[in-house]
Amino acid sequence: MLPGAQDLIEELEKQYKLALLTNGISEVQHPRYEKCSIYGRFDAYVVSGDVGISKPDKRIFDIVLNKCGITDRRKVLMIGDSLTSDILGGINSGLDTCWFNPSKKANNSNISPDYEIVKLSDLKVILS
Image 1 (cartoon, rainbow, N blue to C red):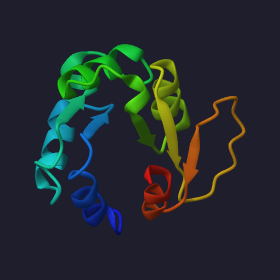
Image 2 (image 1 turned 30 degrees about the horizontal axis):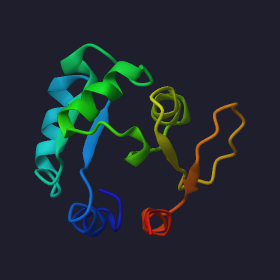
Image 3 (image 1 turned 135 degrees about the horizontal axis):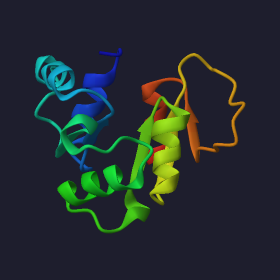
């Protein structure tokens, strides 16, 4: 787990619905979640292998929003480290997006996140 992630999740869960969305094989992803100290703090866990749809397909984001009972997409922030799956998927779904870019990679794509952060703690500024 990234430094500061547990504290951030514990703080965010008090005010927001949280979901984990990942592309991957169910048999691999679920044990990873369950071993993590923040397991149980999320309102939804969605693995592409469980639903047969992967990011950036809008339908997997719809599944997450439905599981969380969210109907107003304007109140959702998709945070992810992949421009081509996380951020593009969020854009395809009409969500605000935040690219977590700790390596400070250049964005040489035509995908434009609404926000970009290099440390998890930077998220607090966006949400304030």
